[in-house]
Image 1 (cartoon, rainbow, N blue to C red):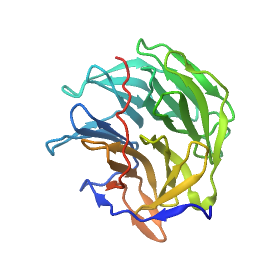
Image 2: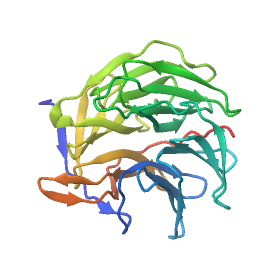
Image 3: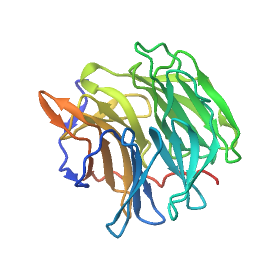
Amino acid sequence: MSDTKIITPETRRVIDFPLKVGESPTWDDRTGDLWLVDILAPAAICLRAGGQVNRFEMPVKIGSLALCEGGDIAVALESGVHILNPKTGSMKLLCNPDNGRADSRLNDGKAGPDGCFWVGTRDEGVPQTGNARLYRVKPDGSFETVLDGNLMTSNGLAWSPDGRTMYHSDSSGLYAQIFDFDPNQGVTSAPRRLHDFMPEEGRPDGAAVDAEGFYWSAGQQSGRLNRISPSGEVIEAYRMPAKGPSMPCFGGPDFSTIYVTTLSADNNGTFEHGTLYAFETGVRGLPEHRFAI
């Protein structure tokens, strides 16, 4: 920890409306739109390049979303993976991998280099029992279970620039792990531990990977973003103006802007609404992968 460089970036608030649990910011490099979700609203929200805001109310909790090749948006709802048509607002069910399991809901998800939608679940039990899973959803609606058991909150999905490493975290288990990855087959190895998070580093929430191959993990409850090397060292920590950063993404015309969603939280007696921040560091990201549908 002593080697971690602490940085306080010049952040700006991007939206003027509150979020309950902001998550899953996703930059669309084809349109210049920025998507995100509010898990508990529940809603998918699109900040259009022209400045307007489109809000799509959801029937049940929404965990995450992903861009589709054809222009639609894949949304991971408590009731399954649906495909949202952003022009009409209509939705159709693709599949329900979790199938209504008790104490479970779809949580963090991202499209991968394989064109599939990877989505994990959160164990909603109190106390948690480790029933979370990670699913790989294919464009035809079929799916496979990649992780099952001894997992509490599947989170932090991201891929290395060459697509050969998949990153994943357990927010409740306080660790990040990596898998070997093949763009044709998906995961090809057992997980290997990348980093165990100390209290001051926060709970590992949503994540992104930059063009240099570093893993950016939102430090939930610690008010920071942790930039982690491929070998697992936290080399930089970016202080955020909110206690509950939930997920970063890279965006802007050259992917040099970092967007960070936050969730509502009590910060030393002061209530903070969830929101969306942005800042620049000189580090660039990469285009989001798309669900091949």
